[in-house]
Length: 469
Ligand code: ADP
Ligand code: ASP
Ligand code: MG
Image (tube, rainbow, N blue to C red; front, top):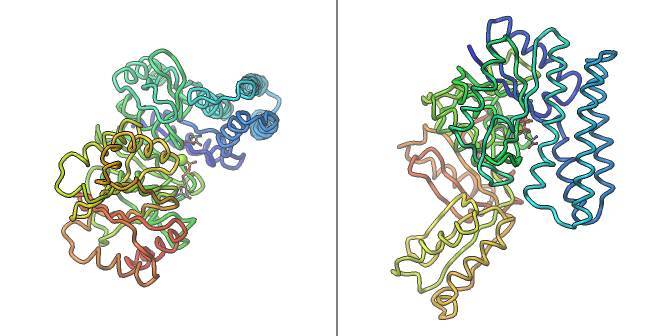
C-alpha cells in the first residue's frame, strides 16, 4: 500500500516520541508499504513563532530572541540524541539556524514597521515545519530508512487566503506527482512539511492552525494513496475532548459525514477541512496514537457503522459570538435574510450556525468572536435605512458563547434525542441560547454560555452513556 503518514506536534516533539516515529515508519516499510511522511513543527514551536510575531508588532522584539533560543534548544536536544557526531547533524542545525535568523530578521522588520500582515504571519508560522522536516528526514536516514526532506511550497498550490488557504487541486496534483513519485520509485521516503503551501506566484501560505492533517489528505489524494494515517497523542477520535471528559473513549469507526461534523465543530484531533480530499476519492483515514501504536485507533470511511449508539460524540467550539438581527420590520418582508448574509459574506467570515424563529422577528447566527467588529460594521452599513426607520433594531451580539455539537448518524429518524438532550442540560440548569439541526440529522447544534460549556459537554456525555464502550 501507499500510505501518507502525518505526525503531529507531540509525535515529533521529544526524543522519546521521535523514537516511536522511527519504529512506526520502519515497521511500515518492513510490511512492504510505500510511505510519505508529513510532519508538523515540534510541539509548541508554532505557538512560540506566532506569539513572537504578534509581540513584535506591539514593540516587544525581545520575545523573538527568547523564542529563537527556546526553539534552537528543542531542536538541538533531538539532533544531539539521534545525530551526534555526524555531518548530518551539522547540516541540519545549519539549516535550522538559517531559518531562525530569518525569523528574527522578520520580527525585527515587523517591530520597526509596527505592522504584521497576514502574509508575513504565514511566512513566520510555517518556519516550524520547515525546521522540522530536514531534522526528521535526517533521523530516518540515520536509522537506515532512506528519506528526503521536501518543502510543501513546491507541492501544494493554494489560493491567497493567508491564514487559511485553500488548495488548488489540479496544480497540486501535478506538482506532487512530479516531485514525489520519482522519490517513491527510487525507494525513498519523502518527508514533507505539513501546514504550508504557496500561491501560484510562489508566496508562502498556511492551511490554518492544525493544518498538517489537511496537508496529509491533500497529498494523499494527489498521489492516489491507499490510506492516510494521522499519528497523534490519543487513541483516535474520542467521544468527547478527553481534557474535558476524562471518561471519553475512542470510537473505532466513523463515517466521513460524522467526522466532518465533529471536526468542523471543534474536535481538535482533526483539522476541520482535512476529511474533504479523502472523502472526494473515498480514501480511508485512520487516527492513531504514536505513543500506543498497536491500538487500532479510529478508521474513517464512507459508510456509516452502527455502534449501537444514537449519539456517537459531543464537541464544543469556543470563542464564538451570537449575532442577532431583529425588529418588527422583518415579518413578511422578503430579502432581509439574503441581505444579512450577503453583508456577512463580504467580510469573508465563516458562519458556523444559523437559527431563525418562525415568527420571523429575528434571525441569529454564530461567528468567531474575532470577526464580530467587521461583521457588525458590514451589517450596519447594509441595513442602515431599516435601522433608522426602526423597522430593525440595532444589531446585537452576545460574546463568550460556544457551539456544542451532538453528532451521530444513528440520530437520523430517532425520536426523543432532542428531548433527552434538553432534559440533560435542564437538569444542570444550563440555559440554551439557540438551537439548530442540520437536515442530515447527523448533528444537533446548541449555543450555550462559554462558562457552562464543559459542564454541558459532561452532562450530554453522561445522558447518552458515551462512557460505556
Ligand atoms: P497533533 O499535534 O497530533 O495534531 P492535536 O493537539 O492537534 O494533535 O490534536 C489532538 C488533541 O485533540 C488530543 O490530545 C485531544 O486533547 C484533543 N481533542 C479534542 N477533542 C477530541 C476528540 N473528540 N477526540 C480526540 N482528541 C480530541
Ligand atoms: N504546526 C501547525 C500548528 O500548530 C500545524 C499543525 O500542527 O498541524 O497549527
Ligand atoms: Mg493537530
